[in-house]
Length: 186
Image (tube, rainbow, N blue to C red; front, top):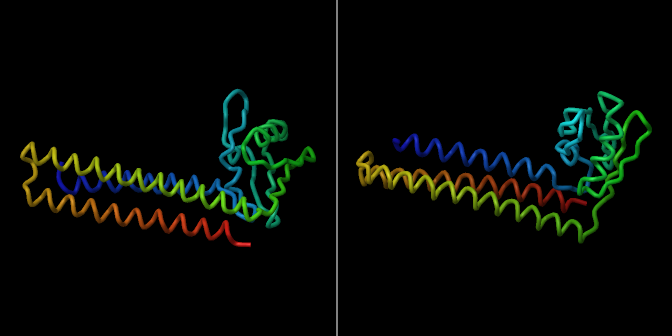
């Protein structure tokens, strides 16, 4: 593998870590309603578990409410069961056409816990990025042993990988800070 190939593979894997973190942060509650809280809930639909966003139209008509309008009215009861079984702590209200989820405002204690959760998710992402850096550096060392890279190439490759690591750690920090500010907003 050349320097470019090693760096490109590391960058692709780091991008995936950022995407995963972004998806995880969507599921963390903030002070207002957000369809990201429920869109990944899996509902049993004709024997298979399907994400809620594929079964219903999700919207937030009010800042404290999520409206779920199923495409197929027969799945309404299954959606209610899936929401109750999830760890959201929200009670669905159904009128046999739509489901309304009222999202209560968060207490200061709940906000602190959610900020801590956000920090934990960010730290997991940083660890994943550092593991990718380690793997890329190992690959570069192996290429040196196999006489594919020179000492200078190895140094250049490791510097490039380190700059990628710093760039992606900064992205993680930005995402976590943005989410923490959303949670603490009153």
